[in-house]
Length: 344
Image 1: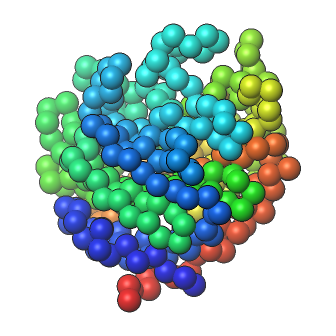
Image 2: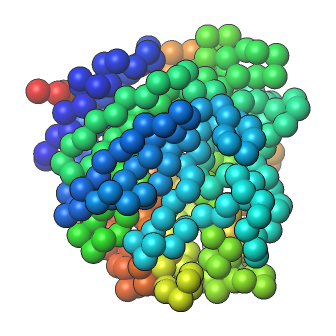
């Protein structure tokens, strides 16, 4: 399997387990797209460009031009048809047809409840996921990768978690655009352990363009998962992947999220709502299955690391036309089996 030689630029990060993360990343074998992927660093973000045109922005700073960003997010995101793929609100509040609910639903993000602290929503008394400043950027096999280190900070200032995240951006042969998200998490310096809590409010999430909603005035959306469940039946079900699609600006397009087989409790449960929230959540067993509260809790002791990886695919057409099932199978084959191989 072809390896990603990321040792050079990962070596500049400050996480104590950066070497471990680099070894896992070396197992990523990603097919090269025909289009050039480049980046441009700005004050609080890294802009990803495909053939010189904006694909998305990885916002890593604590502030945005329109208000506080309590965690790294990816916004905006443009799909292969040129359509905006996620909701603008709350980064913008002047877009017609957008609901102004759930202001913590910021495009694409990763968060959860840990040690009784709410990192999922935002505001007074909530946790914050703070970038340490600076990013690592590298390219390999036609893909562009960005590494971001973050601290999960409690309202009292304690560091609850330290996270090392890598984002891969690329284009598949059919022009579908992908964002691969890899997260390695360990308890922070101020705690003995970190408990991810049994709640539906998490974890790897996206809030879609209003047209991809299943209900509502502007909804044109449909949804399916790998188990064959459709539309509103997806909520709380376990599946390897889910896909939403609909008509945006006169063209059919959508987004799929893949859960990697190496992830905790794969296939994961999906907090997949009819109003456009889609979240892979391996912790919320109580809510999803009616189990005893706490059944889904997951404890990381000091020195332990939880690693998770996901792929977002932004595609033209519907899920069948885009062969989402085939794309998932190819991704799994390419990224499974060599994670412990050392760098050259």
